[in-house]
Amino acid sequence: MLLERLKKSTVTIGLSALLAASASAAEDQTIRLSKDSLKLALDPSYGGRITEFWYGDRDLLAVPDPGENSFGSTFWLSPQALWDWPPIPEHDIAPYTVASKDMDSATVTSAYGAGARVSKTITLNSGQSATVHYRIDTDKAFPEIAAWEITRVPNQGLAFAPVTTDSVKTVRGKVAYELNNDTLWLPMDIGAPLVEGKVVANGTEGWLAYALDGLLYLKIYPEVPLREMATGEGDIELYLSGEKPYLELEVQSAARSLASGESMSWSVDWLVLPIPENLEVRSGSPTLLQFVRDQVELASAP
Image 1 (cartoon, rainbow, N blue to C red):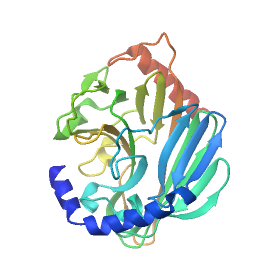
Image 2: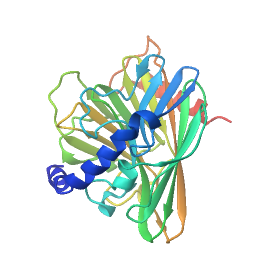
Image 3: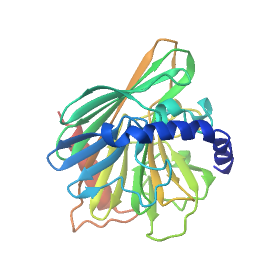
Image 4: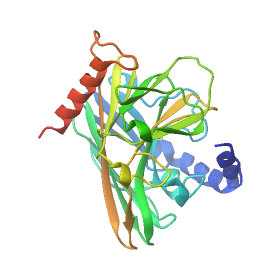
């Protein structure tokens, strides 16, 4: 990451100009969707980014001291070798065009960057669930490409997902994860020193969960066979910043090749709900795992 940050510094002027242009219109252009207990804010002027995700009076994306760009839920192309660092501005921070919007749904589209255009359709399905649908359109050939959703949350609580255990690897820094019940667990203590690290893995059930203060935030996405993960990536990735107090909950699609003019689509369901008070939230908890699996099954039912 240090190398990536150094590379980022070489394009400060260009990024700053884009950020300034985005910030000037952010307040006026923010799209606010709502359905019962669920509310979501989408900023087309800043990378088409989801900046707020409220359940009742709680914003799950509220990160203290997020810094210049380390907030909300964004989208990148995978593998990272396609762009190295920083992320492609047209996808991550530059303005998106609003294609449609109403009370509980909106569609925004980026400009082309690095050979691809990104469209996002966000729909609130109920007071507990939303679907984020992504489409990648190309104007050049990609021998390998995948979709990548990056969502920043506070570096507190517990993140976990069932994984292929021999696929788990730390690719940057240090991550104090645990493997138990064929599940990757990342417990995080409030006020712990900031230590940068990233762990990647192949998920086995198509979901990534995050529990904090009695709430469960669950990402459900199409399962990715181990052989179809993007090179050097995982369909589940957890990144802890060593500079700011946030965790990135990252999921990816299967990788494929696209010819110029072709497209690919991918969706992630977001689910948020209270965790029963009598359920033990800790690494290795079989009852917590079963609770999440029950929610995934319910969400997948016709």
